[in-house]
Length: 127
Length: 123
Image: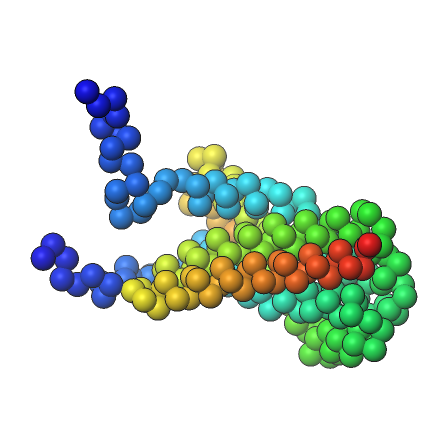
């Protein structure tokens, strides 16, 4: 009996053992935005499927996606997309071994937050 | 005489089962999406709320159709691997396996549906 507890081991501690910091909050947001994008992504797939199905069904789905709540979800997804993209760039930078000093990491964190908001506003203006 | 090296004999027998493929897949897909996502936002975005004929005509053009298809394909594969890490962090045992399998199925189903829809519009 090498491992009696198989499948029921304790998980490593996370959120509850840390004091919130800019670096941790921005990291958690990268995860939340990335995974929450499934909602916007599925809505997008539904929209494409409706467009392929025909005008009546498209009118229904397009109406839902561009309704007030739909707009809110798509706007949130747009920000999440930019945030996750910038967060991903930060990870690509970190993966090269650069920017891991606390000061630089915090600067990158602010860049991700401010950059994502700016890009979202810019996108809304352009589109 | 065995020609296997010690390393080759040990490979795949650890708890992790495999090496850095997951990390590398995430790196490659993230770089790909860095190019695709802005293109997708500015091609798909303006079409939201447009009349049906305009949408069909637009996505019948090669560039918007290819960008949309690639973004959905690479995006859902990136999600499949990303959500796996999320599940592995917060769930264990059978729950973990069931959730990962469900998310893999969802990712492929969504990607296939999106590709089918775009192909039907474009062709």
